[in-house]
Amino acid sequence: MTQSSLFATYARADLKFEKGEGAWLTTQDNRRFLDFAAGIAVNSLGHAHPHLVQALKDQAEKLWHVSNLYDIPGQQRLGERLCAATFADKVFFTNSGTEALECAVKTARRFHYDAGSPERTTILTFEGAFHGRTLGMIAAGGQEKYLEGFGPKAPGFVQLADTDIDLVKAAIDETTAAVLIEPIQGEGGIREIEPPFLRALRTLCDESGVLLIFDEVQTGVGRTGQLFAYQEAGVEPDIMGIAKGIGGGFPMGACLATAHVAGAMVPGTHGSTYGGNPLAMAVGNAVLDVVLEEGFLPQVAQTGLILKQRLAGLVDSFPDLIEGIRGRGLLLGLKLSFPPAELLSACRDEGLLTVPAGDNVLRILPPLTVGQAEIDFALHALEQALTKVSASKANSHNK
Ligand SMILES: *Cc1c(COP(=O)(O)O)cnc(C)c1O
Image 1 (cartoon, rainbow, N blue to C red):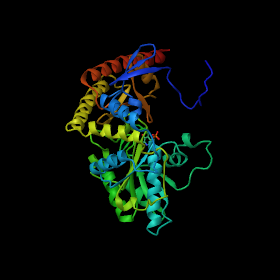
Image 2 (cartoon, helix red, strand yellow):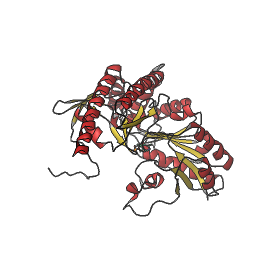
Image 3 (cartoon, helix red, strand yellow):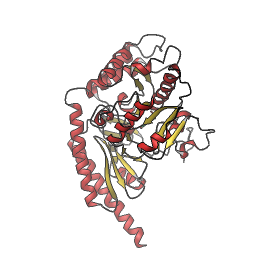
Image 4 (cartoon, rainbow, N blue to C red):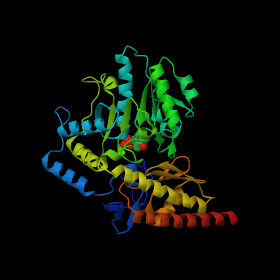
């Protein structure tokens, strides 16, 4: 092992990619991989999408950064387009998902403060949640493995064991500011929250003066076959964090809110040096150009259905290994009867990249532009990999 100058925070695979094109990645030593990880649901339009490359190049030749001391026309444009396409009236741009949620929580608390209820600071979250890695968001996610060794857990976050409306009702008191939830838990294992629960949550929040925050960092921007997952459930939040897909690989995020709630975020209450810089805005607008094109989202939904059916066929062939298929659109997961590491590595040997998640799930996250030939390749690779894992399990049983 050569000594690395990097923090050892990541368990990295020994692959060095040099080039990407569509759903495919090529390593420095010229091996090709089909990318069904998509940078963890980030490369929504695949690699080197010509429209995104052009937008970034054009902007790079004009202006990179000026800070939020000045108007940034690309922010106005992307903000207006996001608001036109969602429940929101106002947008704050960030550089990442976790910052989008930090802004969401600050906005919720400030709203109550402004409304004369400064005691409303508590955020209710759910078991299995993931909201990012800042000190605030590891407290929100509530996972011991992310909190351990990092000092006192930030106060003001209470985690509920289940998506049970009576549990939420019992947890709400005069200090509750908001409920924060992913409509589909991503890192937690592609766990879909039932729309009736989300609707009951909306009603309960309305009745008790509590705000509803959706974390659509992973589910958003077309991943589920809708622009946002909440649209399928027919429930609108007051505040929403997005990131990943909106940048198509350029680091950016956003906090969206209704005018009523965002009104409390007056000058000086929040800021970011880079957030919404011209490069990020050029790419974000270019991503929306493609995702909002007529027919794009129905195509994602259709491709998702086909892929899900094909994956379901694997459950029939490997019933001991796969317990079921989770998710919708192109946010899919194989629920396994064993930890996903072994299958992930067997897939990689077959030239297919995937992502592990909690709850023994292997996430399948193709670019939204994925085609039929690539799905065929992926299914063949998965079948080979599952056959290999199955044989190795039979072997270790017989020993
Ligand atoms: C990835 C993710 C985050 C954190 O986003 P970063 O850009 O890594 O900060 C937050 N919430 C969800 C649901 C995510 O999937």
